[in-house]
Image 1 (cartoon, rainbow, N blue to C red):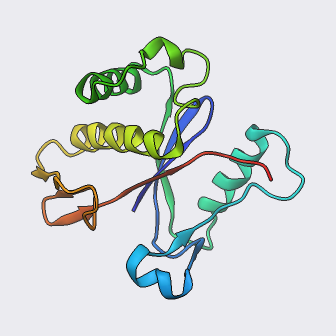
Image 2 (cartoon, rainbow, N blue to C red):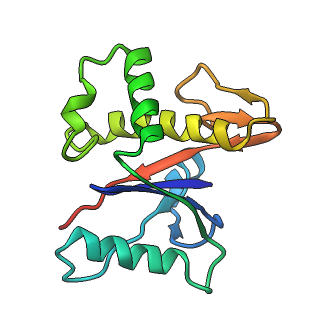
Length: 161
């Protein structure tokens, strides 16, 4: 599982061990899958502190998760992937709307689709000799296939309750 953690400044790409932070959702688990929830801690009010806490948990020796890449939201490859995806989707938003906090004004669903497309672009760059197949059905069991692997992209934003 490749997790993409989106913050106001950075994208963190993490290979997840499929165990840490997972919980079941009762009878819905079979049809909708497990729930992955990582929190930044109680009484944490700054997103920077929450991000640091979550990354510390993810890279702890108690699990096998690994941060494999970090990219600024303003990095050329992220901006190009976002621009290419916006052009392909015909979205009315322009890249300039992301100049302060990229993707923040989007709904979580739309933001997830955009980050999925960015992750696909980066996966293609990192695995140039692999064969990719993207299912046409948005309700498929995975986002794409890389060689014989099923690849699913998950994303989230920080929130305070």
